[in-house]
Length: 430
Image 1 (tube, rainbow, N blue to C red):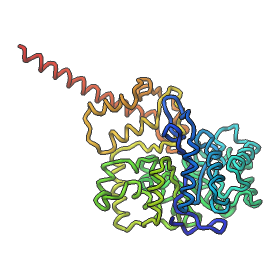
Image 2 (spheres, rainbow, N blue to C red; image 1 turned 135 degrees about the horizontal axis):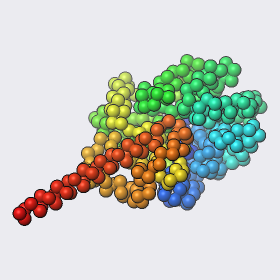
Image 3 (cartoon, rainbow, N blue to C red; image 1 turned 90 degrees about the vertical axis):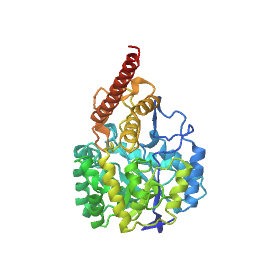
Image 4 (spheres, one colour; image 1 turned 135 degrees about the vertical axis):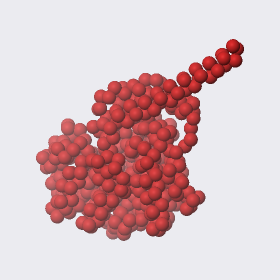
C-alpha cells in the first residue's frame, strides 16, 4: 500500500483511507442509503464489516474516518468493534472522528464534551488521532460561530490536543467560504494539523461554476498547501458519480487506458498531489475495497497528458448538466417521502450520462425505479426544508421541478405519438 509523505505517531499514513459513512448492511445496501421505508432496517452487517476492516489493515490501509453522525449514529461503534477485534494493535492505525454538533441542542459545550466522550467509548480507545470540526461552513458563518466559537468548543478542542486526548486538530469544509477563510487566517493561533476538503477532477476548477457559493478545490488545496497544512480528501468520486458510466467522461479516458475503471482515474488524480495526506473512500462492497487497494498498491501518478485528459473530461461532464449531488443524505428525510438522492441519480444517469435512450425507455425506467407515484418528483411541494441541509447548496426544489418537467415533456410526446399512431391506423379504414 502506497503511503503519503505524512506521519502521525511515528507511522506513515496510507494514501488510501477508509471513510465509514457507507458501511455495508445485511440487505446488501449501505447504511447511509435511503429506501421507501427509510434507512435500512436490517442494520450494519458487522460480520462483513469486520472482514473488510481486517482486509484493509492487512493490506496497509491505516487511516479510518468516522463521525457520530454517520450511519444513523452507528458508525463509530461498528468501526470501533471491527478495529478492536482485528488483531492489530491500536498503535498501528489512526482514527479520525468529528465534533458533529449539527443540532442547536448540541451547541452547548457540555453537549460537545459528552459527544467526545461517547466517541472514545464507541471507538474503544482513550485517544483520537485526528479530531475534526465537522463541516464548518454548513449553515453559514453564524452557525459556525454558534457551534465552535461562542460556546468555547474550539478552544476546548485545542486543550484536548495539549492534553494528548487528541493528537491532531483539523476541520472539514463544506459551504460558506467565510468559515474557511476565518480558519486559515487563524492558522497562526490554532496551528491546524490538517484539513479535509471535497476534491476531485470536476470540483478542481468547476465547483464555483456549479454554485457561486462554492470554492474550487484548486483554491482550497493551494491555500492549505501555502500554509503547509496537509490535506485529507473526501468525495474523490463525487458521491460515486465519477465511478459510474458516463459517455462524456469515458470518451476522454477509455482510449488512454481501456482496462482502467473510471474510479481508478479519479483516485489517481487525487493521489497525484504531494500535499495530500490520504484519500478517503466510502467503500461498501468487498469488490470496491479490493480494486481500491490495488489502485493504491502502488498508485501511479498522472502524467501531464493524463491531467489534460481529465480536464477535458471535467469540461464535458459539466456541459452535460448533472446535479452535483454526492448522496450524503443530509437532505433526508423528506417530509413528503421523496428519495431525493435517488431522484437526482436517476436524472444524472438518464439525462447527463450521454447514454442514448428513447422516451419510452426513460418512462419505463422512471416507473420501475419509483413505482409509487407519491415518491416521484412531481410530489415535491417546494417546502425547501431539504435545501438548507445540503452541503453542496443545491437548489433542490428547483432541480426536482426540472426533472419533473423533463418527465412530463416525455409523457406528452409519448401521448402525442400514440394519438398519431392511432389516427394513422384509423385512416387506413377510410
